[in-house]
Amino acid sequence: MQTILLAFFSSLLACLLIVRLQRLHLNYTGDLHDQTRQKYHAGTVPRIGGVALLSAAALALSWSSWRGIVSRDVWYLMVAALPAFGAGCVEDLTKQISPRVRLMATFASAALAAWWLQSYVTAIGIPVVDDWLAWTPLDGAMIAPAGLLLTIVGVAGVANAINIIDGFHGLSAAVSILMFLALGYVGWVVGDALTVQVSLAMIGALVGFMFWNYPRGLIFMGDGGAYLTGFLLAQTGVLLATRNPQVSPWFVLLVCAYPIIETLFSMYRKFFIRKISPTLPDALHMHILIYRRLLRWAAGPEVSRDVTPRNAATSPYLWMFSSLSIAPAVLLWNQPTLLQLVFLAYVAFYLWFYRRLVRFRAPRWLRRSITLEADQSSHSR
Image (cartoon, rainbow, N blue to C red):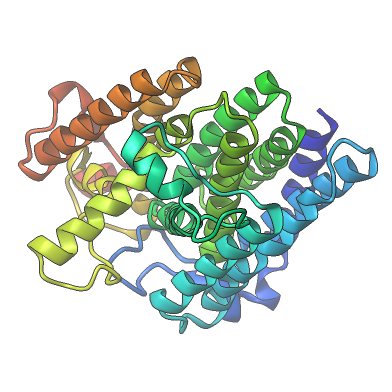
């Protein structure tokens, strides 16, 4: 409890300072609403919430380490996160770091964590694949190359996935809180103090951040915060599954199913259907389709103050959507066959729902009409 409370109040205060002192740094840290076609907020907002997340999590985990709850492994984990976090922060400040460079930085973070913590996946419950993942070039070798490569790609992929879904107020933060809750709970069940403490620290930091981020969007976590959150989320899952054989890797995969599927489908859509680079942005992510097609825009001209309520109303749909994979994952965390079946069902549901959104055939009960004060006043005139 001390860990989560310390992280919460530290993040709350750090975000408050960033918001209150924004006149000193907004020229460098601001995110303009009209910079790209994927900006759905009003005004200029500081996008360095990741600084608050890192400082709050580090402070809380320092306290846990000082109390002897966690070993020095937690410091290997936090130091390993710095390349991904740093590349994201530089992008937040300069807006000039390419997606490829940021991807390489997340690969570096994942490789450092796998090497320092000796934690990488060598089995997923599929016999032929497990033989490949566990293969070592020499007897007695310390590293299984295929398992190490899969882990690095997977961790970096989740880090980038959290950045991809970071499109609306409270979306990636709340979804990440739900995922850390699942990992922390199972970590507590199996007695893994490291994964529990990292989960508690990130939950507290994210809740403190959300106090200012949702629903008004006074601060954004930015690329730095998204990469940090995604990296720690994925690496916590890897540590939980590799240090505790009773925990199925499919549990971690199902917990993170929404951002993973969103990212993979986005890559497929861009490369095979639209014939463009997977690194280019587009406006066809599920959260954007929900924003445009489930939330009916009220009649009248779009003015800046109308954007915020529409933005905030989008995220709860995705909170519920992600819960559809997280809840069964928690219930079935040590039953790999059932986890695999649920994962396949979730993929099918994602594709079905996405198709309905694209074809303007979303279920009627999900549609929502938002009547905005500005629009009402335009009619009265």
